[in-house]
Image (tube, rainbow, N blue to C red; front, top):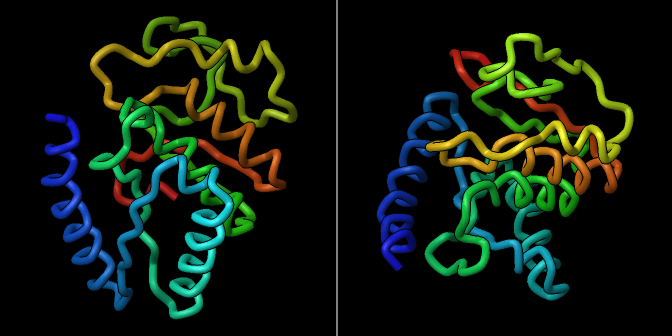
Length: 173
């Protein structure tokens, strides 16, 4: 309940920050709060898809986040990766880009293994590739590579290309 209350306070600040940032470029932000359940229940899925399609047709930028104030099972680290993949699937996106504190998948965690090799392109999500996702780094508020690889499975299964990029800096894309 404390995490859910904190999410309620933080969500309005996050929405305002996005609204301000996008307004500087003449864009209108539209807050959309979803849970994974919204992407699994057919009626809710169709409603969310219609809303997102309408927002996009109006030129709005949907700012989508998990609705942590009502989420129960989903209120754990990393669900925004899978939620992003499900939304990409929902709107039939061509590509999904997940930004992270690391510039993609490595054969091992490069913060722990200096010999880790960056994988530029992954043709297929094999069990060996998924094992490279490892566990989330301690103290981080994300699911690490494991949830990004789960998101990749969802996105690519829907015909959506996916990339993982470093979110630091002024122009990460």
